[in-house]
Length: 86
Image 1 (tube, rainbow, N blue to C red):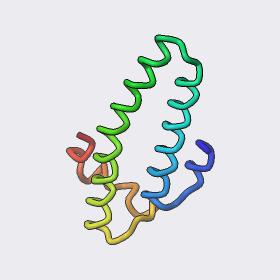
Image 2: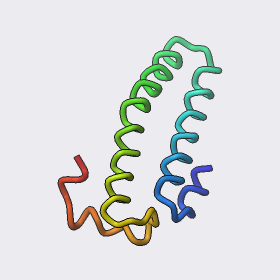
Image 3: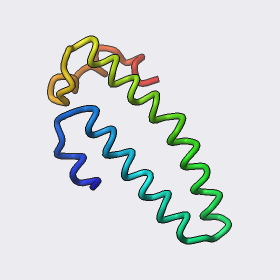
Image 4: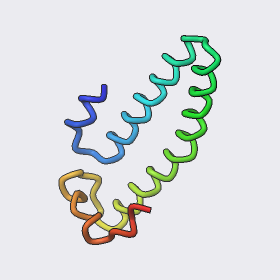
């Protein structure tokens, strides 16, 4: 799935696929059933919940400014707005 993300041209689709990859990692860690694995899985779930909403909001901001979700069109936006990386 991670290789498929590199081939997508839609910004929101690539964010959604990366979320699926992260949740797949969490499931694999939780199936291991070790104490460190469970703690790591919980940390990844919390981090994913906090960051994924911000990433989708950033994608929406880019869409509002460019009226396109194409990765080709929005790829240079960080050089124009470096504060957007925060």
